[in-house]
Image 1 (cartoon, rainbow, N blue to C red):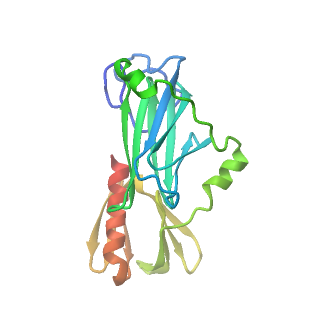
Image 2: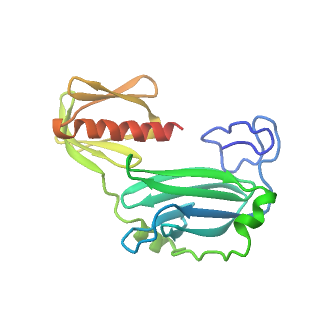
Image 3: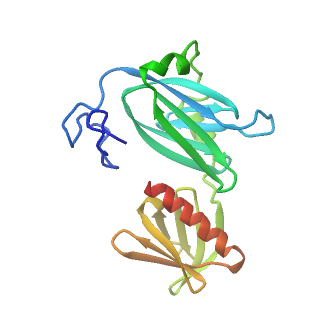
Length: 238
């Protein structure tokens, strides 16, 4: 996210209650409402799943391939989580103008990709002219929990970590190692990881503070898991 005044990069964990740029001191946003367009690139096909969008974990939208939705949100910080099948991607934006977001599912990398751009006044009519606001699918918390569904790992297999044996589960945003002895879970968020590399049949994940997490990986999925973790860590480091 960037300051709309000085274009400086805002801290990743900036407080959502802050309304002044810590770099130049300018006001980050006012009291306005803004339009947001989200388009999902793909072929219109009834057999293809819809892209799901969760706005601030409180409002749920769906967008079909080749179509778009438009909604209004208040100025300020917002979290948008995109989900397609079991894949997910979360982006944070500072809404201080109208936005157009293009998203698609990359079948080669198996990742959701997004392109976010501000809409200037000259292109406003071209983007938002004569559009109707899209109705959310769910706005109640209970219904949202059902729409998100069960948290299912993308990979799950037996590993060893040091002297411990257990199960390693890889989720879209984190990994969990559960010891077979005491059933305790070690959780690593990909945003806290720096890199992953090969190490004699194992993977060595370097984390903040020069901490290393090392897990053995079955030979038949070794390269697949390594590519998955590289993609996830790279995405969260952007």
